[in-house]
Image (cartoon, rainbow, N blue to C red; front, top):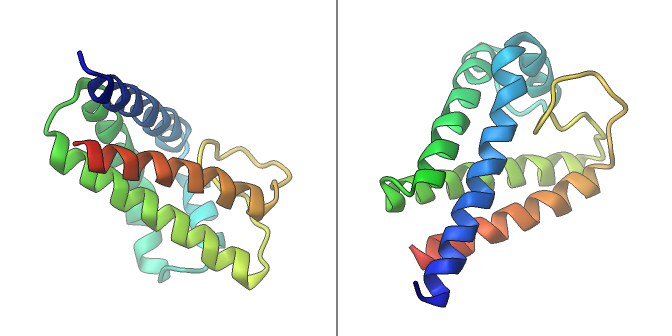
Length: 136
């Protein structure tokens, strides 16, 4: 296994784990996740219910596929696209000055962290996704 293969494997495992972890609570609590999605003020109300049910399952499947290394080009492209959308959503709300609960890993009501923190964290995730994209 070359160094490049090891880096690709590590990025797949880490990003796959992130997607798996992110999906868990949202699958269990779609109503709470729908409220969080609504707080972003980016989508029409008619899309929020569908997104709050479908997105966590997409994250779960992507996480599994990333870890297994299946359908790599498509899986990595879709994962990178989602990471980009998440990053852009945070950037928009950061620019708006909104400080809402991210909902990235938990739907439990809590004091929101700084949107700047969420943005920086997701920038790291996006960088890992870009790295994986160029390695695949």
